[in-house]
Amino acid sequence: MRRLILICLVINCVICHAQDSLTTAKSFPDSIQTKNDFHKSPIKAFIVPTTLIGVGIVGSNNSWFKHQNYQIREELQEGIDSRVTIDDFSQYAPTVAVFGLKAFNINSTHPFKEQAIITGMSFIMMGILVNSLKYTFRIERPDGSSHNSFPSGHTATAFLGADILYHEYKDVSPWIGYAGYAVATATGFFRMYNNRHWLTDVIAGAGIGMLTSRLSYWLYPKIFCNTNKVKKHQPQVAALPYCSKNSAGLCMSINF
Image 1: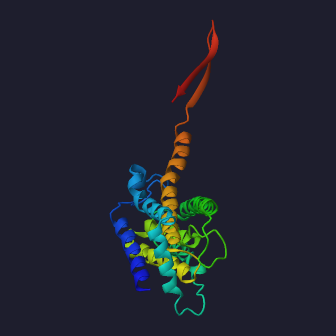
Image 2: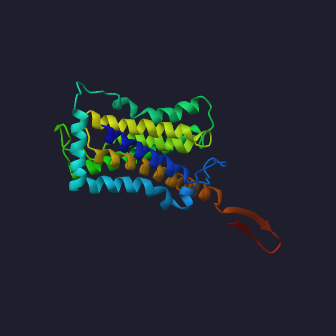
């Protein structure tokens, strides 16, 4: 049990430290235009989530990680009388906090509408990726109930919300985001405590949640800014008829 708690704390600390090393958006002064570094150097922002996903994928077929999975499960199952279903609710807590804080007029990176679009994009991508991997790897759950253990959808949902929470309110206080990551880490812990997931499932789930969140932040202004630019820079056409004693016609001006 101590080993698992230490692993969870290390993962949470690594994620929080990585956030401090990334400079993210200060504001969206023109609603959609952004100064977010994800758009300038997206690779830097994706290092942590892709590493977590890679560890989960490699670990699911690695003998050492498999041994750790079974050892952790045995430690967690010692003396447990019943399940604790808090993870079914805690997975959504960070996402609820994103909109809850906005409802109380706490300053955020995006207005409500843009938060909703980014969150929706993130959930769509997360759902597709999680379910694709589940039915590709078909790893049996620790409790033997099914073969869709990898990766953890609950953990992915929790870390998706935590990542958005951090990037929306980090300028108010980074501890708001850190609290979200702590709740997400606890969600992953209880997925293992309830014998529903292996450690590698949880690690990959955390990476997927963060990856899809950051992909949405990266794609959102590109999609909507391009739309606005097309509308803004449409050519302007002016036409005026003219008439003289010997001729008549149309004078046209096109401004690109």
